[in-house]
Image (cartoon, rainbow, N blue to C red; front, side):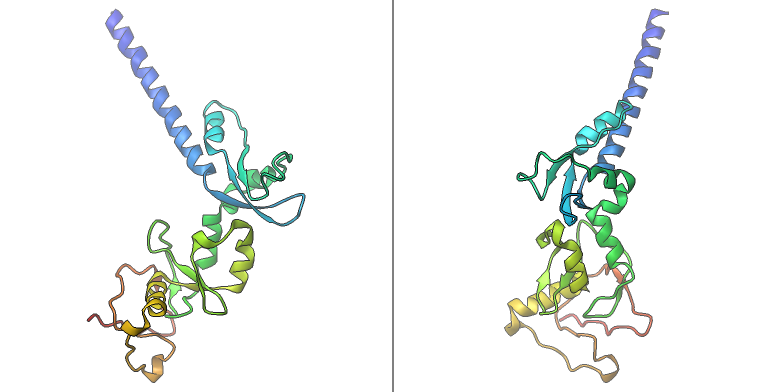
Amino acid sequence: MITALYVVIGTAFLVALLLALRGFIKNYVKWRGEMLVTCPESEKPTGVVLNAKHAAVTAALGGHDLILANCTRWPERQNCGQECLSQIESSPEGCLIRNILKSWYLGRACVYCGRKFREIHWHDHKPALRSKQGDFVEWSQIPAESLPDVLRTHDPVCWNCFIAENFRLVHPELVTDRPRKPAASHYPTHTWPLQDGLNYEPDPDGEAPLPSNH
């Protein structure tokens, strides 16, 4: 009888622990990652990072408390009142930089091959951007506070074209272009193999010519 009681208590404790752990992980994932807000003091875009562990622990204990772990205006303004947290509380998903980038790419077309972005691969095959001067910019190179300006002035580049065109810039002596067909003159046709698993779909106005593998 006592053994059975211990089993019931142990099982209940384990279930409660698993539920608490599940809630912790869910809230940790929800609040982690760099976010973009408008600083109430400067009224300018500012990058912030929440203390995701603190937010997840307080949520698991039935509370709700958000605090900043970092801000692009720190350490100069580290003692601010953190009024920007209200923006994150009202739209946590909308403030996440990865979601801002995802929304910006979807529906747009690569400036080189013309294919529209459909699914973004966050851990590999990340698309890039190209400035009006032709310089490539990767996501990791963009300060959070500069993101709105960069997205207004740069064009999207798919992962395949970024790799190919960047290779052309670094090793122009190793690249040979085939003559382009008049009907598809706006598509680059490179002679080196491109990676399978494209993260965009064909432009509805026409297919880009397939690259040939040598």
